[in-house]
Image 1: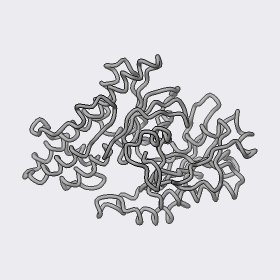
Image 2: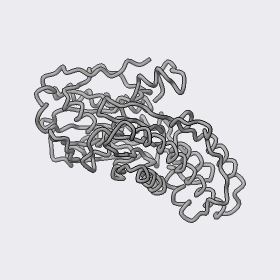
Image 3: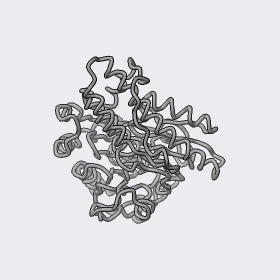
Image 4: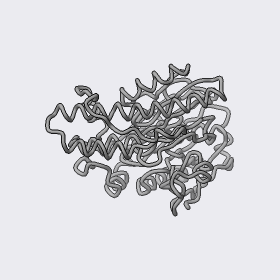
Length: 378
């Protein structure tokens, strides 16, 4: 198993900065976006995004219908220096104005993660700055705090191309998993069904656009895990059934109707599991806030369905601004700044991790998938 990122209070720059504003450079390279951002965090928890630069690799991977890890890693190597330089320029700062460097250390495509983490280490060493190795999922967990004042604790649905889980979030490094996918993530189902329908990459936005002209009532898609009363998800059966139906679609209207049925089915399952989690969370907390983060949170149907679910349980609903739903470095900078605010930094030899659950204790004690040589799955 990969050695976890070690957080400690070592390093004078880290402890000296605690108590005042913290300005942190964030770097994100876990998948197919090379991103850098500068975020300033005030002592009372208010975050200001000074810059956020994202270089997308969509054109590089479009011909393959998905992300090719080797192509992604090479692109990160080529783009990282320019993206960071642009983020610093747009923030109007030089490296001397930084209090720390935060870089995604996992989970993700490990070749890409290594590029951003290595660049972050280089900046930290060259400028004598504290390094904070950030869990990419923790970045998504705090991303709602980039657009609004959000107090802990809250219930989080993290729903993206690679992850789908419900978490009780009490702060950075303090989260409990309530439910997770036992097979595919919702975003993966969107993308693979879109591919079966002959749509472009990325498939999720293309399927949403097609679904706008469809009538999903024509198709009866399977509903997963109906006999279980937990908060886990499953999208593999839906993905298989929809992909087979896609092969029989003869007209553009057939495809639109199926796209609408798929979108509705995914939103329904997310709503059903979230409703269970909301009910359980309300029994333990008076502060009732439901946060939805990750790339799938940008889907308007999903967002509207979940907002209605939260309202029915008496919860306030919050999703990050659309720019911070998909992968970005502002969320990594914020997560790093919140750790730095607590005096927590990472060792310079921290390793990149292809797997890194937010609630590692639950992932190891009650694994959805048996842990392998790369560690417990997120």
